[in-house]
Length: 487
Image (tube, rainbow, N blue to C red; front, side, top):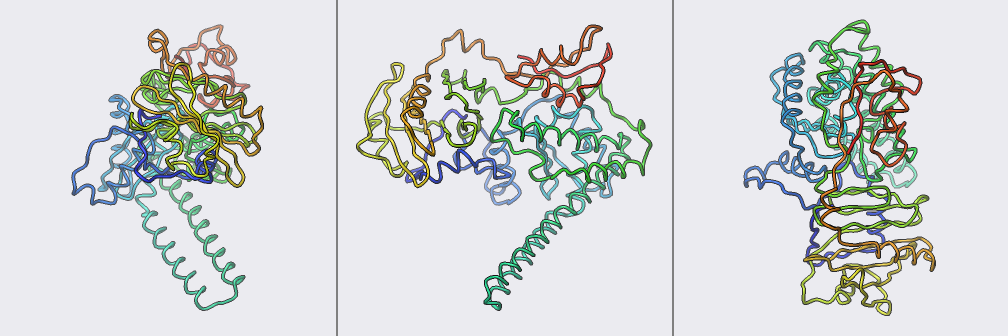
């Protein structure tokens, strides 16, 4: 959560918008960043005129900006240089950026800008696995997939309009549209397989283990299953498999491609060197944006914390803290705005930023010594309880939503907002971001004992296995190195 999210004049939040923002935020591959508050350099006017530069800035905003780690950056740049030299188009220029996001993702722009999140870097277990992702994205650039897909989409749109103009039968028009969408989806899958094949060839010619691609795809799939099972701590994370669907066929295809270049066990993996570069990597949320600890959100920089109602899962984004209760029938959003000191909080609640506020429900109150106000609003399918709290120079907005509001649910929302409080200096000093620590397996260590040391809120074993590419039945040998999440 950024320090301040200032609403532009005239910006209004309708109930439908709130529900979509709370419950369906993960649908977009690159979230809207209109209200993101990020410290980014100001590009000059010539750069602003470039669509690629605008897309670059949008990506930075959506993924928390760039993650600055000189050691990792050097490792990535040397890996990319090695891959470029072994590629079909060694004259292309690439620039790689580490994104400051726990999401598991990587992608490329047509001009050769490569992006990889620190979340994906943490998931990989050796240099060949990371190289396989970078080479896959280079494959999209080499094969000009973005330009080709754009042309295909343009042709499909023209065909659909033509059919709609000529064919007056709605069913026939709908069938033609469905066929064009299916063609595009099939085309996209074909592109993924082509990029896989190009990528495996590149890493093999560069001297990396070509089987790293199959291992990485497997790790990505396991991580996706961990998220979909509800074990992941994020409801807003957009991952690699959202736009790079992994199937058993892709893993089989990667293995078949690898066999064309080498037998298993050949090629460089640089496991120990890679793990050494990972040591100290921030894991999870950006520490400057606060932390989620179970149902509790802590922001040491801004000096406050609050606890969500029972059953909620929280996710911290650059725009807001979002929460969703099991079953999806209750949700919350916390963000901050600038409100003039002379404007009362009750007047702010009625100022139009939220639609359908019940005037009779607006009243002033105090939350842990801070001026506050509350109101209710009703939409078609959702009911809302609003709280605004003046804390320092900003106003914090709690938007609670329920499909069926009851006195008990409303009381749980009130108890949650009453947990909003200022942190002590001692508490702030104790806030530490989780990070990756590389440890050497000792003679008495087991998967279970090491997993127990993971500084994660739940499902320590599953997270330890996924992070290290291990199975529960694997045997650890003394001297092996593994990744732990520690504080």
